[in-house]
Image 1: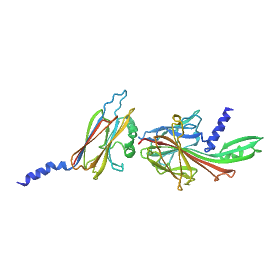
Image 2 (image 1 turned 45 degrees about the horizontal axis):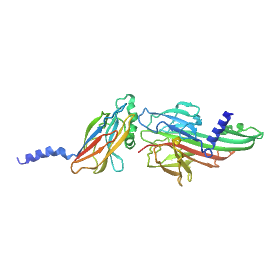
Image 3 (image 1 turned 180 degrees about the horizontal axis):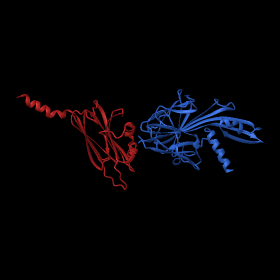
Image 4 (image 1 turned 90 degrees about the horizontal axis):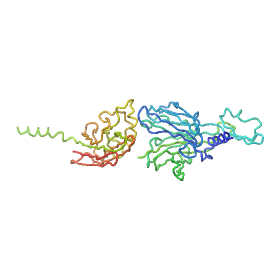
Amino acid sequence: MKHALVRVALCATLVLPMAAQAHKMWMVPSATVVSGDDAWVTVDAAVSNDLYYPDHFPAQLDQLVITAPDGSAVKAENPSTGKYRSTFDLPVPQKGTYRIALVNQGLFASYELDGKKQRWRGKADGLKTGIPAGASDVQVSEMASRVETFVTQGKPGGDALKPTGKGLELVPVTQPNDLVTGEKATFRLLLDGKPAPNLKVVAIAGATRYRDSQDDMDTITDGDGTFAFTFPKAGMYWVNASTEDGKTSVKEAKRRRVAYTATLEVLPE
Amino acid sequence: MRRFPFFALALISAPAFSADMSLTVEIPTLKVAEYHRPYVAVWIEREDHSVAANLAVWYDVKKADGEGTKWLKDMRQWWRRSGREQTMPIDGVSGATRPAGQHRLRFTDGKPPLGTLAPGHYELVVEAAREVGGRETQRIAFDWPAKAPVHLGAKGEQELGQIDLDLNP
């Protein structure tokens, strides 16, 4: 019973980033700005209510995609998934910016069988076998979410942040590891590689446990997909945007939900 | 015969024509349970905060496997404005950490690491970061070249002591 509840909660979190406002998925690296060729970082990845306290569910590390400054794929070291969080280590020998992403692409279905509401979650190739014959009121939706953070050794830059052209992605105008209090930080959001205009972007500072309100900031992307924040305080910020459209990759799905989340560190001046 | 004294005078006064800067950085004595010598960076910034010259970087050069470079980013203003673009060690600039006390440095116009500064308004920046301690920056604004000898100074509060900057035309 408890297991089933947890599974439903996870589905809701992964599939309904808009609706599941209370549950936030994130990754937090131990450092975002590092020096020296021998540098490593360790990263926590979880789904939680409070930022950044693992209190709900670990992130699934099979979704992890790490890209080095030279554009190559990097494997996480010492991956581990616990009760409330997943962790992994990452050596950062290359100069430049590493992109660390949890990329989730899948389908979500609800249907009725024998008068009971059922849910299914999986990949496109599992849809036919996943929903039993005789199911009625089948509703399929597609989802594409990307949860990221960034780590830079030496000078920010490199090829890791080149957009893949799939889903919502962040393109730096200001380098994501070059953020300082009181300075305007500017980024662009792309949807399937094209500017994503008129999207609401929310930023919430971490350490939410130690204050009474969320103190979230929000802004809207302009016609070019560009948005900017001037972060008032140093710390980790959870930056999120999501949207919905009909650009599905399987014909059974009518709607597609797309979400992007980044953890950005802002350093004191 | 009359020309000789002139010639001698010119020779003697020649060094005075190349402007110089004399800097004293004080690392304060701190009464703390665990003390490590601070990392210190000294550099010159133009008005747009770009770095005109790195003058000194004191860090743990002897630690095995380049472990000492791991903490360079803790001098976070220097790291952002210049350090992250450097390859350590920097010849004639970087060196070992220094003990508490006054450290005198002298720089000559036209010679590394100061090089030739275009005439203008600058800031000398001193940043110190200490393991299990604090971080502090102090800035001294100056015009270059100095028209007459100038004495400038700043007083650190935590990780830096008295800083004196003397400019000679």
